[in-house]
Structure formats: C-alpha cells, structure tokens
Length: 247
Image (tube, one colour):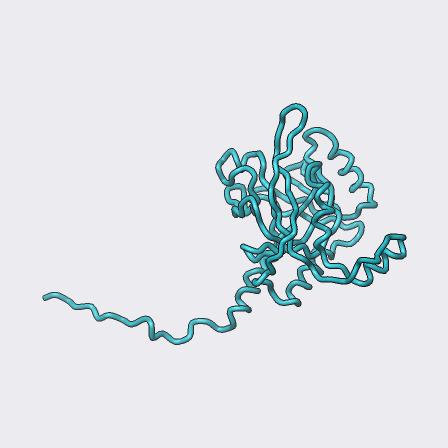
C-alpha cells in the first residue's frame, strides 16, 4: 500500500523574528573587532588566488579575503596616528603615541628593507557594499602620501576650524560639515628600475550612502576607534595560530 504524504503550506507560519530589520542590521555590524581594508598588489594572497592584484579586500583569515574590487566607496569618519611592528610574527604590536620612543623607533625601522614595520595615518571608514566599519591604514611608503587626500573627506567641526585659525591657517573658506563620501580607486606606480605596484587613488564621490547605521552607532564606533590614549599600546588580532603581544 502506498503512502501519500500530506503537503504542508509553510507560507502560513507566524512571525519569525523578534526585533526590527534595522536592529538586526546594526547588531550584525557589532563584531567587537574592526576589520582591515587593504589594497592588494603582491604577496601570498595573490599567489594563492585569494584575490586578484589591484583589488581592495578585507582579510578574514589566512585563507579568506572578502573581495571588494578595484573601486570602492567609503565614508571617512576619524583618523589616528599608528606605528605597527610586525617583525615578530608571534607578537605583533601597534603604538598610537607619536611622541613615544617606541613609535619613533618603529617609524625609523620602517625605512629599513624588509623590516616589517609601518607607520602613518589610520582611518576609520564605512564601506558601502559590505556596510561595515573598517580600518584603512596608510602606513607604507606608497600609501602615506594619500592620507591627506582621504583626510579632506573627514568631518570638520567648528572647534577644529578655530584650532586651525589659532595656528595661523587660512580658514576663510572653511565651514563645519559632516563626513563626505569618497571613492578609492587604484593606479599603477612604477620606479626607474621598472618595478611596478598598485597604490590607492582617492576621488570625490557624489552618491550618498543609503545604508548608514544610526548616528549613535557611528558615534560609538568613532569613540572606540579614538579610545587609545597616549602611551597605550593595543594588541593586534592576527591570523589563527598567531599570538598578539600584550603590553
């Protein structure tokens, strides 16, 4: 005797979530760890086919990179100075006090070949396609020069304008404004020896962001990003199996 299975109409199920879509979106952004936005030009990730050269991506692990492509839109929100010492792969450190001896030592060693040290401006940005807050670190010789181009799109307060005026800057054309979107593209740089590499190219963006979280969420992210005080060193999250140096 054959058995006939009764069909179930799953379209009649009751509500399946408690909370608004906006609350779920904002909660999904609260990972507790700030992802890293990186322009990939050469290296193991490209050799292993994880991402093509000349593309922006977000490293998730040594085997996974979120590929964003050669052109992305970001909203710069804040900046801080940063020195990164990766000479000991088992204990990477980051220093945010530009007046400290350690920061200056890392900056000096960054000039040496293969020192695995970097320094420069670290930006907090909001990336359009992923809807994520990310760190964009302009810490290499080829990226430090474009930090000023990114900084143009940061928020500008009246207090900042007053400080610039007190320092002797011409602020006649400056007005307070919020963060402005910009597009990060890629250009190919070359030296006299024929070597080439990819560098960021910063351009204005006229398309507003439609997926921004609430002002409170953005303010919290900015506060966390700027919470490192002079003299403190933050542990750096590394790939699985590697340790971060606690200072």
